[in-house]
Length: 266
Image 1: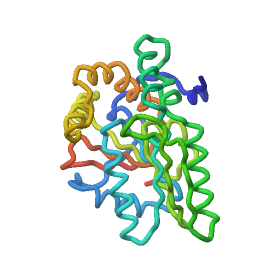
Image 2: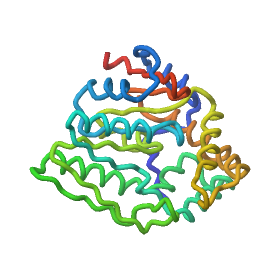
Image 3: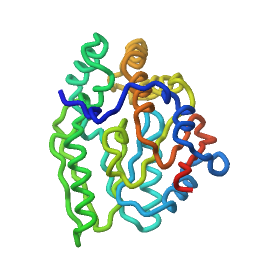
Image 4: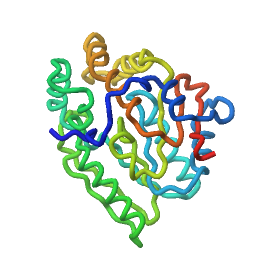
């Protein structure tokens, strides 16, 4: 089983909170708290030219909401985007169940979770291919992603079709993508919260309870156990080992979100 963390990454714990991550990376808080993503997206889009923007952060941190808002912002400006989520490359539900069990039984280290639960190599190849098409093609092209993860039934029998326009900005998001692929992203954005994962667990439980009527729901005790043993340690591990992001969006309070910028770009 190949580990994508074989490039000198360590199981450091000094940045296992967002506060420590911000201190370690040396960030400056920009402006006043934001009650919507619109002003945040305006600042991000105006910061610098980019061909690939990557949004990282823990599950239920707010990545998907920011991604949707950023895509909508670019569209209003007349700029085409191509969205490629890491979750297209999730392993099947049964495989991930076995991975979780291996971590619980300490047969697999938390550092290898991302490499075991997602097809990291295929994700990287797909993003790089889309980047090349957007940069060099003179007409729109369709990129097919076979064997994509089907979230409704937990298997890899979906085919995703992505339309790439010439000059399109690639926007990608997923848990841990900065740590594994940060070397070829033009702008790295981290979305996170200011606590030791208590708020994130609360959001996980709330999202499960809000599933449509008739949809299978996981019991709270199982979610709490999995979060304690797998999700929280993995989140802490990625905070400690992720490269410095260009921007950080603190979504602890969705009515007062905070935007930080790394001082190297000031």
